[in-house]
Image 1: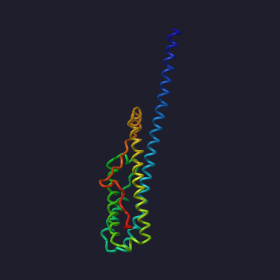
Image 2: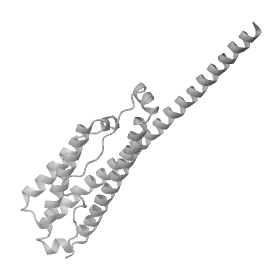
Image 3: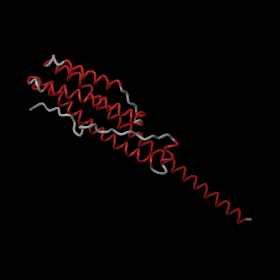
Image 4: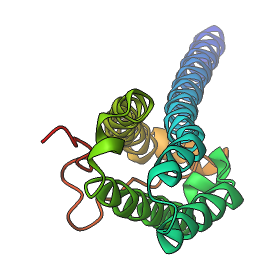
Length: 203
């Protein structure tokens, strides 16, 4: 009788230990996924910041170029329309789970980049504009913004990959399904976008 009771107590202790270990494992896994998700959200906020910085430069750039090339109305309208389209798309961190939504955002940003390239190409035809200190400063800031966009998009993709890898690994994938941790979409390079747009008009 005593032997059976001791065996039963031993099994109960083993079950309790297994439950405690499992609970700590689940707690650690969940917290790790939350931390990675926060890293993705933080990286996304930085992407938004650098895109906003670029968008903030555009009105001043357009006005500066207009002062020298007022008849280039189509180009100015294209930049303004592209900037407005970009501003109308509010991509939340939750929408990063949807590759189609991220693609829509990317397409709008690519359209703006293309319109800016056309605007800056117009400046090539105006030597006085290229020598204007305000234009040179805006050009430099835009070039910096384009570089920061590339850096932050790369960083976002890196942290999104870490997060996606973690929620697909066993046993984290069980908790990811249980707590609705969803895969994040990546930025994809647009054709011909291996390099930031050229904004050097010193030649």
